[in-house]
Length: 158
Image 1 (cartoon, one colour):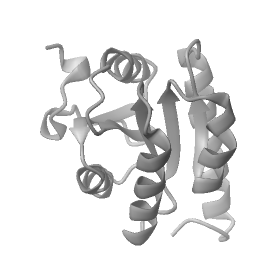
Image 2 (cartoon, rainbow, N blue to C red):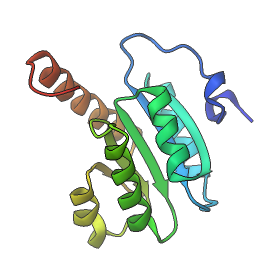
Image 3 (spheres, rainbow, N blue to C red):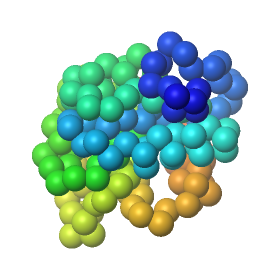
């Protein structure tokens, strides 16, 4: 297994102090892992500090990974049905853990009819098949800049 997709958080290389940190992972029994592993590698190559939490995680394990890594973003990948249930449980658990300020992005096979429901749950970014690395990086940089502005303006981040 290459270092670019190593799931163990302890093996992550030190990040640049100004790098955008993002935790990536998969919930449940989805076995289609190539996509998220590829995205993790490409985001690292683009200078994003990626913590790959792993695959087949429970909601509690993913929330714990987010709490430990203290990222600005968390990304979940889905290639099978059930993502609406998982995302409702995940967003509720994030809020209950006091992690509601972490921006959530979802990638994979998400039906367009479900996008509004996901956004209502608190999903900020949706990235489906055909999304390019520059598109994801641009979104991460834009949202991170908005968060920084809110924080320095004294109106937002805890």
